[in-house]
Length: 213
Image (cartoon, rainbow, N blue to C red; front, side):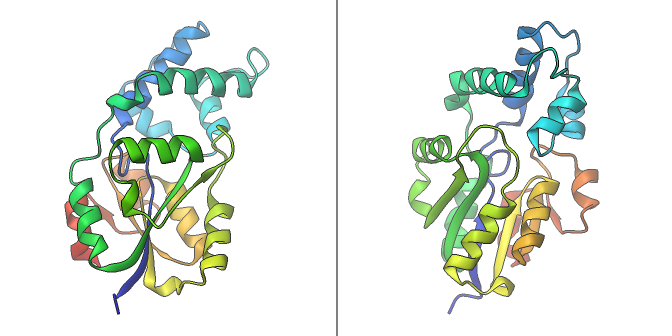
């Protein structure tokens, strides 16, 4: 029997390298609604987080001026226009292959809308690596905590033998709610300092993951 039962993977910023692109899309959204501020990638990584509505407030959007649902829709139009150009994160394909031999199943668990998630994984030819791809029903990016909890309750996996791999403090929050271990990748949407503040182990390269398990 494999030592690890289930590996839960975050998608954006963990398996798919869309950090620079997401920062560009944020700046495009700011420009579209005539805001003067722009963000460099490291500034973006210091402010990005969930729920997305709170993150939009941090970067300076005024919801009295433009309602959040409108901003979210415009952002997704910008993002979806060229997301096909975002590659898998370096080492992601190898990590997925390595973990397939060390666990009973791998699951995508994302705040992304599920149909977007499935399409992006399929286009990068990794969809068959997952026994399930879990995403939300909308584009508002609130939380995946309940999604993870429900899946754990339905699949009846042993939390002690499961692990969540992500790149944000929300992944740590989700893992804690699910009762599973968490390992955080420092090359994604949040800075190393923010990830280390969660108290979870961190990795700089996805290739290092098997060694921690």
